Length: 178
Image (tube, rainbow, N blue to C red; front, side):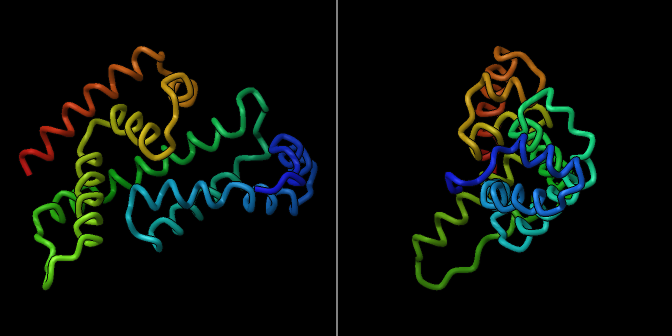
């Protein structure tokens, strides 16, 4: 992100006034973060690209109705988490079945070990209830505070903390049993 990049709200207003290039600038400004969010969750570049593209297509369709009542970053996080939750729900059985497949290895490779641990973690997260999964995704993928999570999800800060605590407890049980 460069310093000469216009503010999100200015770009949105320009887009709402018919300037298509403003949307391209908005995409350019946020693409890496959106892609990175999905890459952490999916562990697959092509899937992350597809999900990021879905987010920007949803954004393109709905941005003309954006009323500037919340910050754009909050709005974008909501689209990201809804898209991630939909993807996780669609792929839940595939993720659970994948957990039971042992990775094939010749020599022990530490980078493969790390990747397997990360994949196992996200498979475990996919098995959490939706609210807990959302809080964990925002906390782990974006390092958001409970206050920010509260603003994005519409739950209280205390509820975000409780959901995170229960999610981590449940996640440990899932990972210990698998």
